[in-house]
Amino acid sequence: MQTCFALYKYAIIYYLMSVNKQLKVLMINYEFPPIGGGGGTTTRFLAKYMVRLGLDVSVITAKPRNENTFIHPDGFKIHYVGPTKKNHTTTYIKELTRFMLTTIYYSKKIISSIQPDINHCFFSIPCGAFGLYCKKVFNIPYITSTLGADVPGFNIGDKRLNTYHFLTQKLTREIWNNSSYVVANSSSLKSLCEEFSPKLKLKYDSITNGVDTDVFYPLGSQKKTNQNEIKLLYVSRLSSQKGIETLIKACGVLKNKQVTNFKLTVVGDGPLRDKMFALIHQLDIKDKVNFIGWKTLEELPDIYKNSDIFILPSVMEGMPSVVLQAMACGLPIIASRVKGFEEVMEENVNGLTAEYNDEIAFANTIEQLIKSPDLLNKMSENSFEKSKQFSWQTIAEKYLELYEKTLSNPQTIKEKITVTSS
Image 1: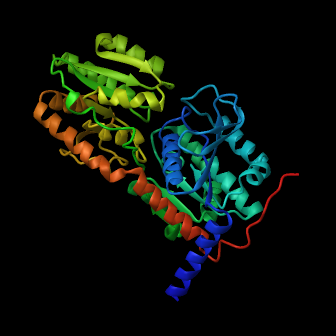
Image 2: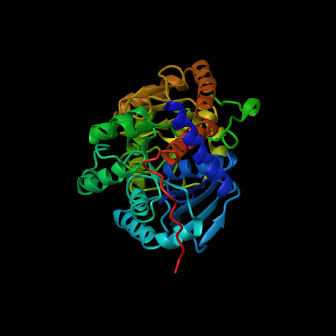
């Protein structure tokens, strides 16, 4: 029986490759660089490495500029939908709703143009709704990648997010029920998915985020740590989830302890920007914080390489791409002792942890690394080595296996529907 199934599987894949020349994948994500954060980064690099594996990849995303289509240098095509999005750092519920309705409205045109064999939806809502619609109407199978805040139960202390999850839980379950696979980007997020919908346990998989070592790598022997000014780095949204207030307060604690040989660079933007500046002024640490705003993905490698310690005091995470990027550039990590970091961080190996929302604990942890150059250097080496476990090549191969399993399942694949626009 197993032999018959294997033969059937490879017959399907051979058919797809021979008739369609390439396996066609449509990725859907409302955020994609320059819009958004780690979720968009995940889509970009997975698309890049899927192209390297020989797939024909297209991406549907929100419109950051006036173009309608764009051939990315990495070989995949980007299709923009909806009104141009001006704020690249923050997405609101009305924008999620608009993206969902817009993609569904144009679905016939999108499907007829791309003719995908499978859809890959990043974030359950809004993108999974497009996958659900296309399966019901065009018989195109899809998988859903959950990345954190789209999973009910992902608790960051924000009542608005909890209300959003309550209102959308039925749609989330419907999307997951009809997905061939529901993929979480960490083991802790997978557990959260199983808590929300335990009946789907066989559909859940865990595939981590990755890092592109062609782009992110250490400065090497040219880098010299200046003990007179250790360079701390924060890269993320300025939001309560990411803990920027805790980090700024920790810098104030360090100053009060007469630890002054540091400079924090803050990269990002978001709703807590004004509050952050107010805290900096209140604590009188303007000389210790360098705010450089939101930077493009292309600008980040040099920023990482010229830093010494990466800090992310989040309340909760799925699996933050910025931590993997920092590790690949050889930075030790200081992070909250919460779910989402356990697969990328080893305590006292490539980083240190502190209780979230505890600025004193973070200050003490930062001080420990500042005053221990040998430990800092050792953790830097360990971060770089550990980052090699998260290569996008390996991760793309795992996703390709899920695509193939989906397309070889007799229950999900029937005769492909050819859609033509009228």
